[in-house]
Amino acid sequence: MARIAVIAGDGIGVEVTAAALEVLRATGVKHGVPLDIEELDYGAERYLRDGTTMPAGEIDRFRREIDAIFLGAVGDPRIPDMRHARDILLATRFELDLYVNFRPVRCLSDALCPLKRKTAADIDFVVFRENTEGAYVGMGGNFKKGTPDEVATNEDVNTRKGVERIVRAAFAYAVEHGRRRVCMADKSNALRFAHDLWQRVFTEVKKDYPQIETRHLFIDALAMELIRGPEAFDVIVTNNMFGDIITDLGAALQGGMGLAASANINPSEALRRPSRPNGIGLFEPVHGSAPDIAGKGVANPLAAIQTVALMLENLGYEGAAKDIARAVQTVVNAGVFTPDLGGSATTAKTRDRVLAALG
Ligand SMILES: NC(=O)c1ccc[n+]([C@@H]2O[C@H](COP(=O)([O-])OP(=O)(O)OC[C@H]3O[C@@H](n4cnc5c(N)ncnc54)[C@H](O)[C@@H]3O)[C@@H](O)[C@H]2O)c1
Image (cartoon, rainbow, N blue to C red; front, side):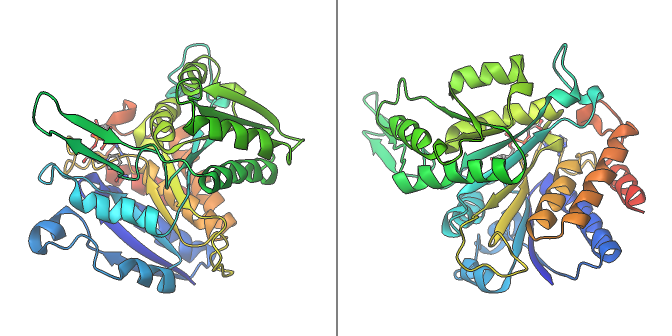
């Protein structure tokens, strides 16, 4: 039994999650995957209605009762301080210690490849973004706020444990998935202390993986090389902020935000069970709530649908995951594209075509 908590969230998160759930249910029936889906109403509407972002104790309940969490997107212009999004998304990532933000970047069709003189086959790599440290931990503050002398700081926190576990996860993935190369990106030429730690850890850990070809690039050089020669990359490992940025570049290489899937996982989670070989994970499309197109029925559901595939793979249902990937490929090959990809298909039509391809 796969017990899945679903938080559709805000904006197009609600639309793409509805489509993705239909695909999940159909896949479950086809492949005999017993599903227990619990839909939760956390998001902007609930917060504005009764002040609830995430009820106290909910994450502990997830630990006990849930195998995976699926999240659509959170973010609403009516809540500019993002209070609810922080509690729902960042708190879950941090409290469940989901230190791997895993983002596959694969272009599914030459028609979607944005680079001159490159084809879809050139764009196929994965990013391991550190997910629990770095500049996003919320350490910092203001001094003389609102005055011309204001000082504002955010600390970039890097621990030996945090850096080592994400670097090891990237190498382990490369070995398990037949990927030949691991590239680590930092900015150790400027961030002499924090990113020197990344350098030392990478140098040490790579000795345990002599079969893997390694490379180091400063993050600015990586941004350039991903455009010039994406075919040179298999696995990229980097810190929280750089990973956040470089994976949006990755999404653009895939064809757009509407196609990019991600998993937040903790591969070293102690409390594993057969139904959750990687511990409890949080699975989400990379995109946000897209207020500019919310409610229009044109959001691309393929990122969310591919996220369902990632979730099923992670839960050990590889056949079901591959079937969804095949169905998505069929729909892309048929040129069924939503407006973000230059077509005119709606969310519903794209979903229906995926369901039809699933049979
Ligand atoms: N993980 C998350 O929940 C998450 C991630 C990013 C942003 N956000 C939040 O979402 C809100 C909007 O942020 P943003 O506009 O910077 O990023 P966004 O990803 O929501 O949108 C960026 C652009 O991409 C387009 N787009 C995104 N997903 C699409 C899809 N599935 N189909 C078609 N077009 C798509 C949007 O229309 C928009 O033009 C903000 O509140 C932000 O904080 C949430």
